[in-house]
Image (cartoon, rainbow over the protein chains, first blue to last red):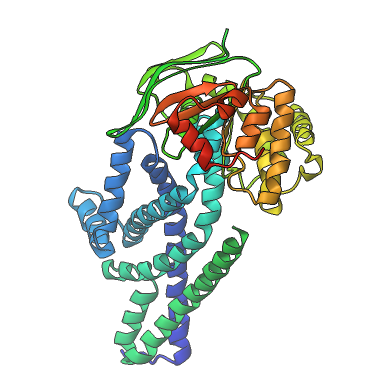
Length: 217
Length: 245
């Protein structure tokens, strides 16, 4: 009952885990973006109830560790009789986490649009929805691109936490391999390199976008 | 029958009473210049006329659309009142032409083609027909301000409000903007402007209003008022700003 791992075996398994890290990141980012957009609209709505809801939502998810959010989703739902797979719990937890942060980042972008733009569009008799659609959001979007891509780095790294609830992404695969091969330094070195390979291009991209939009303004 | 009628208008910013009972009648074709020191309430008064500042008390009526104590149909009012700002406030993500077309298409539901015709006509009027496809950051300050005037005119307002529209411009660009405003005045456009261009106020305006501490302190025909200030405050103010002969 002894399996010999070659370095290639390690890399091959890590690549398999990395695939799930990538998939989880994408799902969290896409779903989190969608939910985040809804939270953003609630946050900047004129309805105070919606505002208060969005504010609480953002504060709760920003004010608690991602790990606790995952535990609550994973263990909490099974307590009330819903059987959640680690995969679903991870996707759900990260989506909630991502949506709260993106909503807050985007709110900052909406508020960064100068007051004069609101005044000019008001004086042209545009309604609130028309101002948003035609004047404010197009400009906020330009401002949002760089910080949004920058935040995606946090999402990728955040997926590592899901290893604790047993989801076999890059970090979890790494710890299993480290236990089996007794080569933790090599394995975790490769794991770190894997995250870096995912995140570094995103950071570079965010930086170049920042430069581009900075010059454009 | 006045086009713009303001009666007993009061406005507070917190505990600061900035407009203390303004009564003002503006007739069709009037060119009104609002002058006064900063903090006198002149910009606030101008901004109440299209609802950018709320009104605490009093009545505002523009061409039959009224606000009583600040309540009423704001968007209907704004369709009758155009505004041009000190900082131009063009929409930077849209071309000059699109800036002018936006409100006619979105607010009035005009077709793209009709709005484009109007935009071309308005840009021609301000001398910028060839800048239709330029973005604001490709235009000089004077050109941007002229686009802003065209944008306001495209909604065919009954009255145009100008809030220190040359104050942010380099001196050599002031005249091209004033020439457009002068042209509008000659065509019979009703104008209310907050301005520091005393000479322009005197030459183009037919009514001068001197604001002081939130009240209309003195008003009348610009030439008479400038030549013969009735109050020491206005005399003082006129003395402190140069009215070149």
